Length: 134
Image (cartoon, rainbow, N blue to C red; front, side, top):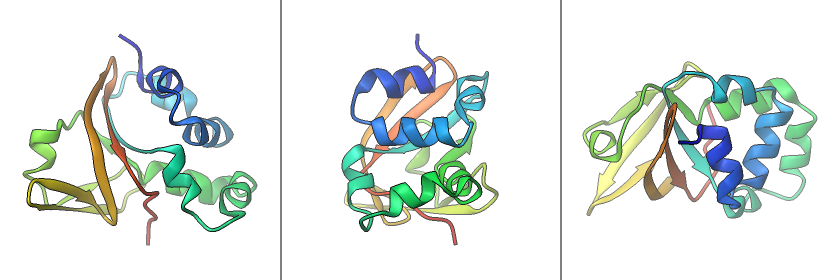
């Protein structure tokens, strides 16, 4: 079974996320033993950001790292467990808000569009927007 980074690379829909993870020097961490739960924005999610945002973040590694680690929760939290939570503390140190309405799960302002992509060191849940720490 592939780890989180290998899974994201293989999926083909997370090239911006993978580029950002590489730029921030987080490949080794997210390839490590974990376990981690990653709320992974798709390339379309990154494309929703204002023009130039991704490029600016790739040149501001501390800010990029803060944003990326805000998408990661320690431990392996499967979708059924996520639905029982109201918030989760991220690797960044801040908490994401989790809401469930009519069976749809949101993390902050992002909809979870695919769940429970199991990896050797955790799980990926796909989200449709980039979430930003306070």
